[in-house]
Amino acid sequence: MINLKNTFGKLKVSQSQKTKMVQDVFTNVAQKYDLMNNFMSFGTHLLWKKKIIELINIQSNDIIIDVGSGTGDIVNLINKNYSDVSIMSVDLNLEMLKKGKDKIIYNSNKTCWINCNAEDLPFDKNTFDHYIISFCLRNVTLIENALYEALRVLKPGGSFYCLEFSKPQSQFINVIYNKYKSKIIPLMGKHIAKNEKAYKYLEESINNFPNQNTLLLKLKKIGFENTSVINLFNGIVSIHKGFKLL
Image (cartoon, rainbow, N blue to C red; front, side):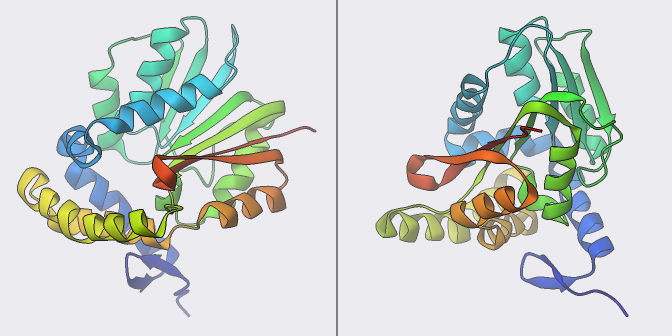
């Protein structure tokens, strides 16, 4: 019997179907991905990414994993400010990974680009000082599996940071944001990326993703300690953080 417990937008699909469908979306939009991000967020996505890097207490010789690295914004920001750290840039989508590697500005011989799944990372336990996942977790088929993997590969004392779309705290802003997601973003996708369906999926994936408190509970249940959440832009995006203490 096929397991129909996963969603792709509003569709009920099997685990294998969802993974393939999500990857197809990103393969199709890879070349226009950065342009669309700039238009949709009015450039603020880079400010959000800078914020998450500022929050992380990065030290010399730290080993960092950037999961769902996409087109490499996080890698660029880290290498720009910290030249003596090692970064594993991880993405399941080869086209996105290639795009990230090709556009890298602040390159480092300590950066590696690895094609793998967040749910099954090819690294030993207790490997990384910091785990970063930025606008990727809602696209993962089995979110809990990815979070367990995050905890596994972190060193004791290591930190977890997740930047993701979330739920606005103001009802007024939430109403405006919902209209923007449902009407304007797919229209941008149609005319800029030539792929309206991909950006309709974006809206639906945001709607299906756990809100701030639900994700915080997941992190605690899995074993992260000292967890907290920071809302940006009234909660349109949020940063969840936690630590592996043992």
